Image: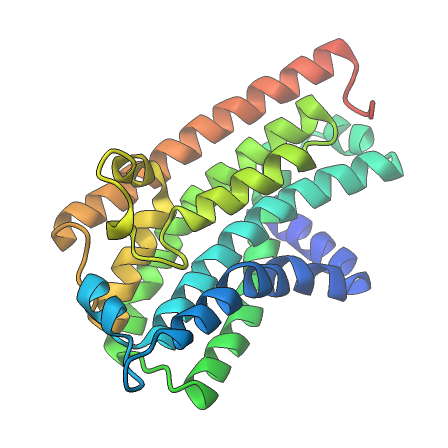
Length: 272
Protein backbone atom coordinates (compact mmCIF):
# COMPACT_ATOMS: atom_id res chain seq x y z
CA UNK A 1 0.00 0.00 0.00
CA UNK A 2 2.86 2.38 0.79
CA UNK A 3 4.37 1.66 -2.62
CA UNK A 4 1.10 2.46 -4.42
CA UNK A 5 0.72 5.67 -2.38
CA UNK A 6 4.24 6.74 -3.34
CA UNK A 7 3.52 6.06 -7.01
CA UNK A 8 0.25 8.02 -6.84
CA UNK A 9 2.14 10.93 -5.28
CA UNK A 10 4.71 10.76 -8.07
CA UNK A 11 2.00 10.71 -10.73
CA UNK A 12 0.29 13.71 -9.18
CA UNK A 13 3.56 15.63 -9.28
CA UNK A 14 3.98 14.75 -12.96
CA UNK A 15 0.40 15.60 -13.90
CA UNK A 16 0.59 18.94 -12.10
CA UNK A 17 3.11 19.95 -14.73
CA UNK A 18 0.68 19.09 -17.54
CA UNK A 19 -2.81 19.84 -16.16
CA UNK A 20 -4.33 20.72 -19.53
CA UNK A 21 -3.33 17.35 -20.95
CA UNK A 22 -5.06 15.45 -18.14
CA UNK A 23 -8.15 17.66 -18.26
CA UNK A 24 -8.41 17.05 -21.98
CA UNK A 25 -8.15 13.28 -21.58
CA UNK A 26 -10.52 12.72 -18.65
CA UNK A 27 -13.06 15.49 -19.22
CA UNK A 28 -12.96 17.37 -22.52
CA UNK A 29 -12.53 14.32 -24.78
CA UNK A 30 -15.59 12.43 -23.40
CA UNK A 31 -17.47 15.74 -23.35
CA UNK A 32 -17.02 16.79 -26.98
CA UNK A 33 -16.83 13.28 -28.45
CA UNK A 34 -19.81 11.71 -26.66
CA UNK A 35 -21.86 13.71 -24.17
CA UNK A 36 -22.21 17.07 -25.92
CA UNK A 37 -23.24 15.71 -29.36
CA UNK A 38 -25.71 13.33 -27.69
CA UNK A 39 -27.14 16.12 -25.53
CA UNK A 40 -27.60 18.50 -28.47
CA UNK A 41 -29.07 15.80 -30.71
CA UNK A 42 -31.36 14.62 -27.93
CA UNK A 43 -32.51 18.18 -27.27
CA UNK A 44 -33.42 18.56 -30.94
CA UNK A 45 -35.96 15.75 -30.57
CA UNK A 46 -37.57 16.85 -27.31
CA UNK A 47 -41.38 16.89 -27.34
CA UNK A 48 -42.70 19.83 -25.33
CA UNK A 49 -39.43 19.87 -23.42
CA UNK A 50 -39.65 16.16 -22.54
CA UNK A 51 -37.38 13.35 -23.78
CA UNK A 52 -40.27 11.05 -24.65
CA UNK A 53 -38.15 8.44 -26.40
CA UNK A 54 -35.66 8.24 -23.53
CA UNK A 55 -38.50 7.97 -21.05
CA UNK A 56 -40.00 5.08 -23.02
CA UNK A 57 -36.74 3.14 -23.37
CA UNK A 58 -34.90 4.03 -20.16
CA UNK A 59 -37.63 5.08 -17.73
CA UNK A 60 -36.56 8.71 -17.26
CA UNK A 61 -36.88 11.92 -19.24
CA UNK A 62 -33.97 13.61 -17.43
CA UNK A 63 -31.70 13.75 -20.47
CA UNK A 64 -29.01 15.90 -18.82
CA UNK A 65 -28.90 13.72 -15.71
CA UNK A 66 -28.83 10.52 -17.75
CA UNK A 67 -25.98 11.72 -19.96
CA UNK A 68 -24.12 13.21 -17.00
CA UNK A 69 -23.80 9.81 -15.35
CA UNK A 70 -22.73 8.32 -18.68
CA UNK A 71 -19.99 10.91 -18.95
CA UNK A 72 -18.85 10.10 -15.41
CA UNK A 73 -18.41 6.40 -16.21
CA UNK A 74 -16.75 7.14 -19.57
CA UNK A 75 -14.31 9.55 -17.94
CA UNK A 76 -13.43 7.00 -15.24
CA UNK A 77 -12.56 4.46 -17.91
CA UNK A 78 -10.62 6.92 -20.06
CA UNK A 79 -8.74 8.26 -17.02
CA UNK A 80 -7.70 4.76 -15.93
CA UNK A 81 -6.61 3.64 -19.39
CA UNK A 82 -4.70 6.75 -20.38
CA UNK A 83 -3.21 7.12 -16.91
CA UNK A 84 -1.47 3.77 -17.38
CA UNK A 85 -0.57 4.36 -21.02
CA UNK A 86 0.78 7.84 -20.32
CA UNK A 87 2.83 6.69 -17.33
CA UNK A 88 4.56 3.82 -19.11
CA UNK A 89 5.18 5.79 -22.31
CA UNK A 90 6.52 8.77 -20.38
CA UNK A 91 8.87 6.59 -18.34
CA UNK A 92 10.06 4.87 -21.51
CA UNK A 93 10.60 8.19 -23.31
CA UNK A 94 12.59 9.66 -20.41
CA UNK A 95 14.64 6.50 -19.95
CA UNK A 96 13.57 5.69 -16.38
CA UNK A 97 11.31 2.71 -17.10
CA UNK A 98 14.12 0.16 -16.93
CA UNK A 99 15.41 1.64 -13.68
CA UNK A 100 11.92 1.61 -12.17
CA UNK A 101 11.35 -2.02 -13.12
CA UNK A 102 14.77 -2.92 -11.68
CA UNK A 103 13.68 -1.89 -8.19
CA UNK A 104 12.18 -4.49 -5.79
CA UNK A 105 8.74 -2.92 -6.28
CA UNK A 106 5.95 -5.13 -7.71
CA UNK A 107 5.48 -4.17 -11.36
CA UNK A 108 1.70 -4.21 -10.92
CA UNK A 109 1.93 -1.33 -8.45
CA UNK A 110 2.87 1.04 -11.28
CA UNK A 111 -0.40 0.19 -13.02
CA UNK A 112 -2.48 0.48 -9.85
CA UNK A 113 -0.90 3.84 -9.01
CA UNK A 114 -1.57 5.20 -12.50
CA UNK A 115 -5.19 3.96 -12.43
CA UNK A 116 -5.81 5.59 -9.04
CA UNK A 117 -4.26 8.87 -10.20
CA UNK A 118 -6.37 8.98 -13.36
CA UNK A 119 -9.47 8.09 -11.33
CA UNK A 120 -8.91 10.86 -8.79
CA UNK A 121 -8.42 13.46 -11.53
CA UNK A 122 -11.54 12.14 -13.24
CA UNK A 123 -13.72 12.31 -10.13
CA UNK A 124 -12.82 15.96 -9.55
CA UNK A 125 -13.40 16.95 -13.18
CA UNK A 126 -16.63 14.95 -13.50
CA UNK A 127 -17.90 16.27 -10.18
CA UNK A 128 -17.61 19.82 -11.52
CA UNK A 129 -19.41 18.82 -14.70
CA UNK A 130 -22.25 17.11 -12.80
CA UNK A 131 -22.60 20.22 -10.64
CA UNK A 132 -22.94 22.26 -13.84
CA UNK A 133 -25.57 19.83 -15.15
CA UNK A 134 -27.56 20.15 -11.92
CA UNK A 135 -27.25 23.91 -11.67
CA UNK A 136 -27.76 24.93 -15.30
CA UNK A 137 -29.24 21.99 -17.20
CA UNK A 138 -31.82 20.89 -14.66
CA UNK A 139 -30.38 17.45 -13.91
CA UNK A 140 -31.81 15.89 -10.75
CA UNK A 141 -30.45 12.94 -8.79
CA UNK A 142 -31.72 11.03 -5.77
CA UNK A 143 -29.44 11.67 -2.80
CA UNK A 144 -29.86 8.14 -1.45
CA UNK A 145 -29.13 6.75 -4.90
CA UNK A 146 -25.96 8.81 -5.17
CA UNK A 147 -24.75 7.46 -1.82
CA UNK A 148 -25.59 3.88 -2.78
CA UNK A 149 -23.66 4.38 -6.03
CA UNK A 150 -20.36 4.80 -4.16
CA UNK A 151 -19.78 1.04 -3.61
CA UNK A 152 -20.80 0.47 -7.24
CA UNK A 153 -18.05 2.86 -8.35
CA UNK A 154 -15.55 1.05 -6.13
CA UNK A 155 -16.37 -2.28 -7.78
CA UNK A 156 -16.12 -0.62 -11.19
CA UNK A 157 -12.66 0.59 -10.17
CA UNK A 158 -11.55 -3.06 -10.08
CA UNK A 159 -12.77 -3.52 -13.64
CA UNK A 160 -11.06 -0.31 -14.72
CA UNK A 161 -7.87 -1.58 -13.12
CA UNK A 162 -8.24 -4.64 -15.35
CA UNK A 163 -8.52 -2.33 -18.36
CA UNK A 164 -5.40 -0.58 -17.07
CA UNK A 165 -3.48 -3.85 -16.90
CA UNK A 166 -4.51 -4.70 -20.47
CA UNK A 167 -3.38 -1.23 -21.56
CA UNK A 168 -0.07 -1.74 -19.76
CA UNK A 169 0.42 -5.08 -21.51
CA UNK A 170 -0.32 -3.49 -24.90
CA UNK A 171 2.08 -0.61 -24.17
CA UNK A 172 4.93 -2.95 -23.26
CA UNK A 173 4.39 -5.25 -26.25
CA UNK A 174 3.43 -2.77 -28.97
CA UNK A 175 5.54 0.19 -27.78
CA UNK A 176 3.11 2.74 -29.24
CA UNK A 177 -0.40 1.28 -28.88
CA UNK A 178 -2.37 4.50 -29.31
CA UNK A 179 -3.96 3.40 -32.57
CA UNK A 180 -5.32 0.31 -30.79
CA UNK A 181 -6.04 1.59 -27.27
CA UNK A 182 -7.84 4.77 -28.30
CA UNK A 183 -10.55 3.22 -30.52
CA UNK A 184 -11.05 0.21 -28.22
CA UNK A 185 -11.51 2.49 -25.20
CA UNK A 186 -14.01 4.60 -27.13
CA UNK A 187 -15.90 1.51 -28.28
CA UNK A 188 -16.00 0.12 -24.73
CA UNK A 189 -17.41 3.43 -23.50
CA UNK A 190 -19.98 3.78 -26.26
CA UNK A 191 -21.22 0.20 -26.02
CA UNK A 192 -21.64 0.54 -22.28
CA UNK A 193 -24.66 2.72 -22.99
CA UNK A 194 -22.93 6.05 -22.39
CA UNK A 195 -24.95 8.00 -24.95
CA UNK A 196 -27.84 5.71 -25.89
CA UNK A 197 -29.99 3.03 -24.22
CA UNK A 198 -28.64 -0.42 -24.95
CA UNK A 199 -32.17 -1.60 -25.71
CA UNK A 200 -31.90 0.06 -29.15
CA UNK A 201 -29.18 -2.40 -30.16
CA UNK A 202 -30.13 -5.47 -32.23
CA UNK A 203 -30.82 -8.52 -30.02
CA UNK A 204 -27.80 -10.37 -31.45
CA UNK A 205 -25.42 -7.51 -30.58
CA UNK A 206 -26.75 -6.62 -27.14
CA UNK A 207 -25.27 -9.65 -25.27
CA UNK A 208 -21.77 -8.57 -26.35
CA UNK A 209 -22.12 -5.47 -24.18
CA UNK A 210 -22.81 -7.58 -21.11
CA UNK A 211 -19.14 -8.58 -20.78
CA UNK A 212 -18.20 -4.97 -19.92
CA UNK A 213 -18.19 -3.97 -16.23
CA UNK A 214 -19.09 -0.43 -17.26
CA UNK A 215 -22.38 -1.69 -18.74
CA UNK A 216 -23.57 -3.07 -15.42
CA UNK A 217 -22.06 -0.31 -13.30
CA UNK A 218 -23.62 2.49 -15.32
CA UNK A 219 -27.01 0.78 -15.48
CA UNK A 220 -27.04 0.28 -11.70
CA UNK A 221 -25.97 3.86 -10.99
CA UNK A 222 -28.65 5.25 -13.30
CA UNK A 223 -31.27 3.03 -11.68
CA UNK A 224 -30.28 4.13 -8.17
CA UNK A 225 -29.84 7.84 -8.97
CA UNK A 226 -32.55 8.43 -11.58
CA UNK A 227 -34.96 5.53 -11.15
CA UNK A 228 -34.36 4.19 -14.66
CA UNK A 229 -35.53 0.76 -15.75
CA UNK A 230 -32.62 -1.70 -15.36
CA UNK A 231 -31.64 -4.11 -18.10
CA UNK A 232 -32.07 -7.04 -15.69
CA UNK A 233 -33.38 -7.37 -12.12
CA UNK A 234 -31.00 -5.53 -9.79
CA UNK A 235 -29.55 -8.63 -8.01
CA UNK A 236 -28.55 -10.09 -11.39
CA UNK A 237 -26.92 -6.80 -12.38
CA UNK A 238 -24.90 -6.73 -9.16
CA UNK A 239 -23.68 -10.27 -9.89
CA UNK A 240 -22.85 -9.20 -13.45
CA UNK A 241 -20.88 -6.18 -12.21
CA UNK A 242 -18.87 -8.15 -9.65
CA UNK A 243 -18.26 -11.04 -12.05
CA UNK A 244 -17.12 -8.97 -15.04
CA UNK A 245 -15.00 -6.63 -12.89
CA UNK A 246 -13.24 -9.58 -11.29
CA UNK A 247 -12.75 -11.28 -14.67
CA UNK A 248 -11.22 -8.15 -16.24
CA UNK A 249 -8.95 -7.66 -13.22
CA UNK A 250 -7.64 -11.24 -13.28
CA UNK A 251 -7.25 -11.46 -17.07
CA UNK A 252 -5.68 -8.01 -17.27
CA UNK A 253 -3.17 -8.76 -14.51
CA UNK A 254 -2.25 -12.06 -16.16
CA UNK A 255 -1.70 -10.31 -19.51
CA UNK A 256 0.43 -7.58 -17.91
CA UNK A 257 2.63 -9.99 -15.95
CA UNK A 258 3.13 -12.11 -19.06
CA UNK A 259 4.03 -9.07 -21.19
CA UNK A 260 6.40 -7.71 -18.54
CA UNK A 261 8.24 -11.04 -18.28
CA UNK A 262 8.56 -11.30 -22.04
CA UNK A 263 10.02 -7.83 -22.65
CA UNK A 264 12.29 -8.14 -19.61
CA UNK A 265 13.61 -11.51 -20.76
CA UNK A 266 14.08 -10.30 -24.34
CA UNK A 267 15.73 -7.08 -23.18
CA UNK A 268 13.28 -4.89 -25.12
CA UNK A 269 11.70 -3.11 -22.16
CA UNK A 270 12.94 0.35 -23.15
CA UNK A 271 12.89 -0.10 -26.93
CA UNK A 272 10.50 2.10 -28.87
